[in-house]
Image (cartoon, rainbow over all chains, first blue to last red; front, side, top):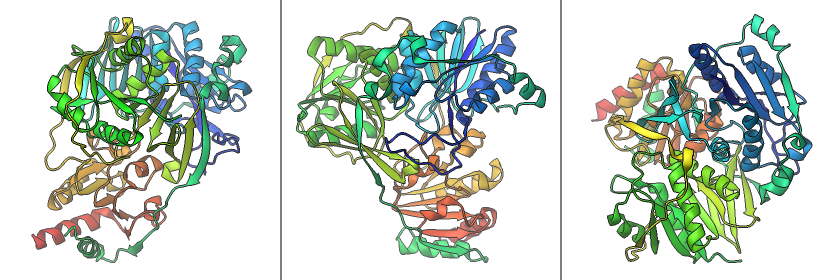
Length: 257
Length: 321
């Protein structure tokens, strides 16, 4: 059971975020492994463990100036990492990103591809399915549980009103929610081992994708970025035992009561 | 170039279409373009509803025989473009299946997909609005490439309103070539029972977060929701922790709500959550951290322990009943 997990290194969501002059997310600061991706890494490690053989490869696109996030995935237990890093990729949209990731995944020909449902910084939520389409794979999105049964992947998929049991033959792509497993913390031993694990950095030229990536491939222009109409903070009371009564009074004032 | 032909993907849902689907049709009527809708399931009676909201043609992909909609619907749209020509734009609701369809269609047509759209106007071509950084800023973008652009639009961006048009003409969509991509199959469906009004439609939403401390305390949220004839919601943190089912989640990856009042209990206000509720008419927040971001958008905030304030609130509401 060989599994590829698509991961992304993102600016720390806890730090203030901004756009650069070309309207791309400012990624100049420290990058971390998107927490949303840690669930896929953990799920993959558990599935490989259960299968008794195979390995987990993490695949990424973005700046390789800081690879602490990828090392984090390796420290959790992934065997190797591949990142496509190229200035020509700045401004690449979801489809361009999917083309890059699909080209790398194809080289690995895994049994299963796992992704988060969406990244925490760009959150378009379409890249995984675009990857599946480009690779000709079936996909199951929004998994809250994943199991392998022979050559079939069995998933509990969230729906608007509950969940569906969905199956697909391998190879397949599955996107996992944060509820799927509890990610492990990297052990000291894992962190030390990660330092010597293979981490390959590729350029766009290595994948022969031409002008399908970067802003030329994105085919949309940002015309304006405006401050949204903001809600002003209203009254704030420190509860001194009368908090509930004050809420009732407020609900009366807006005629909910 | 003005829009002349727009397609809207509308998702069937228990004898009608999802509300977001009808919101998209309503907004598309402002474009002055010919509107065709694409659906699946083979229920010809739905042509009346599609027509009432402005579609003149309803392309039906038919019974999916248990397949997840993403691959078969995207391939049918591609085949349809092959037979009747491409529209200027294709609008898709933000939902589990909507995102699957849009992603697959984008890769099949080699056209970009613009997601998280909350504003869509025709200004000599489509201009979109996308909230970023938890809704504190709005990006405005114009699609510049060769069409059709694919737009994935968030729930409650527009208000659904029927126009009283005649029933749409139902046309069977040609079957596309799905190959292995169409092999994801639903083998069982589980519906989680809910009582009271639906989360997306309730005038009062009471939501709980990590600040409740433990799963059992969510009962306080449910009781207040019931006393106010509202719906109980949740932050992503407690859904992921398994305290409540996903169908309760409010936020970026959950439901978008715009009730008369939203009561956030023990929710700090991550951007993920705020995107889904900041359109509420009134916001009440209870949190023990006076610096919690939720207070920045709350009309009425109580800095206090939810496990003291909520039982007192239940008692006060019961005393009124």
